[in-house]
Image 1 (cartoon, helix red, strand yellow):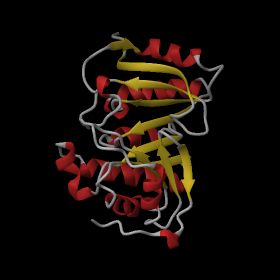
Image 2 (cartoon, helix red, strand yellow):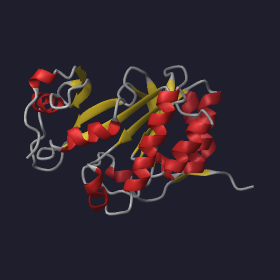
Image 3 (cartoon, one colour):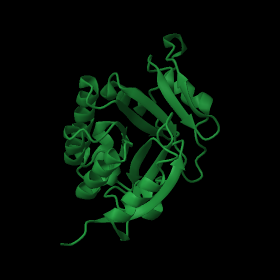
Length: 243
């Protein structure tokens, strides 16, 4: 019988930033069908580095004394559905909570994780308003991401998914995208993350705070200089967001 392999991108034995409020280990999967120019893990978007699944399970087990969970990231972990499901099952036998960072283009994998009760936290990266999606991502992904959002939001509301957040990586010049994405996200936790790319100066915390003020609801803001904090969504602090 051929051993199951994972296209492996790396392992961090202890992280306090991949699942805020929880110490975790992080398994990176190599490969992603989307080629975002700003991806901070660009080195593992392609290529092949196959490892036995038992080797990766061993790495998770070695971190148990330090962590309470594991985050599967990438690349795109849901792209390797069988390997991800196997590792999530193993994590549960190790008494580890399971988190997944995903772009949502493989909703079938997310559905399988939810149906088996194998996932506790999902961070779904929504990159733009729907009408811009397929052009931005250079592929027919919008319907898949919409389905992932619906699946995770439904699971969160029903209690089958303990934690769910929509993450928006915001770049200067695209501030008007945020209220539109926020409306699609509904009442789930929304994160506005500082985007950093090339020579364009990133938005500062205070600039992102101004954008958050347009939404009229609590928002998590993540920046390099300030870490993560809540903006309480003061409706009296709105500024024009449409260009």
